[in-house]
Length: 136
Image 1 (tube, rainbow, N blue to C red):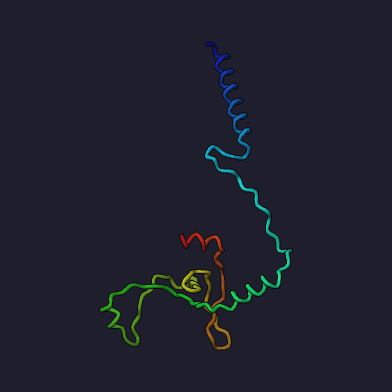
Image 2 (spheres, helix red, strand yellow; image 1 turned 90 degrees about the horizontal axis):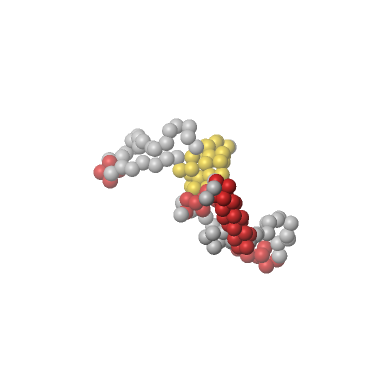
C-alpha cells in the first residue's frame, strides 16, 4: 500500500465520521442533546396571582447575622473565660466580615457607625451560582 492510499483511507475515514456526526444532528457521542432555551427577559409583566405569591415569600422572616470570625476552644477554656478575656479568632484585622442569612453566606462587608449605632456596609455580594455551589 502506498502513502497516497493511506492518505485516501484517512480522508475516507474522516469523511465517514463527519457524515455520522451530521446524521446524529446535535446529539453527541454520549447521547446527550444540546437544549435550546429561550432567553429570560424582564419585559413580561407580573400577573396578580404571581404578585400575591411573591408577596407571601417576601414576608417570611429570616435571621441575618454578621460574623467577625471563629475559634475553637475546649469547654474547660470556655468555662475559664471572664470579663477582659480575649479569644483569638481565625481572621486578620481589617478582613471583611461575613454576612449570613439563616446560616448561609450571602455577602462580605465592613463595620460602619451611623448615628452612634453599628452597621455593616456590603462590599461583596455572593452570586447565586456561587451560593448554590457551596450547598453541594
